[in-house]
Image 1 (cartoon, rainbow, N blue to C red):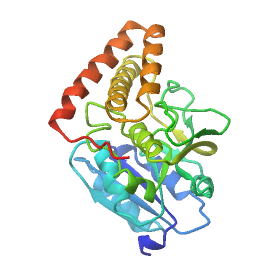
Image 2: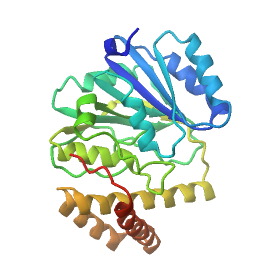
Image 3: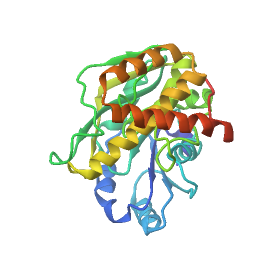
Length: 288
């Protein structure tokens, strides 16, 4: 089956998780979709992940494309994925997430509104003993209109989708952002640029994924929180430098500085400064 006939493509990026992929494969096999769809796997691994992906693809009853991309950066990997398909809707999740069996149908239904350029849904814990982070459980719809500002963590890479046309309009994700780079905000950056380009965003709790991140309260969680603070600082300064939503972003950041711990402000500020100098060395994606 050619990708051009697929209504939706599910893109998943993975790196060195070969020994933990079986539950993810089982969740993908349980997906119940009412229309043709395809799976695109972007692999940046040095372990046996590649062999496991090929073995899974050989037995899966939907088209699977495996892309090897060893350069660092989740934004770059996501770009490799969506550019490998002609499907009009591109959904994204992560290799430690288990989509609900109706996930693809729910995502497609959200895009029945032709003004929606990107969307996301609920992210719930798979293991209730894991720390309650990297999830979003809001029970009601949230709409983001053109030129609105969007906060990080509302629609994140574990459960997000774009129209292919929207990604083309904004030239995709910023290759210099995301896990594997100093600035982990490739998802919300793309959403902000989609809003700046005139598209509408929608959070819809109908679509659900279960995040199996495996982190328990302690140092690992604290390290992740520090990384999110750094990503937030880069996101804020990029918005202030380049985006029409800069004044809303600046007001929010200044309000946050008054309320949040100094350590968080320091991490955000250091990352913002680092990104400021970084953007003179590379050409960041500011298309909208």
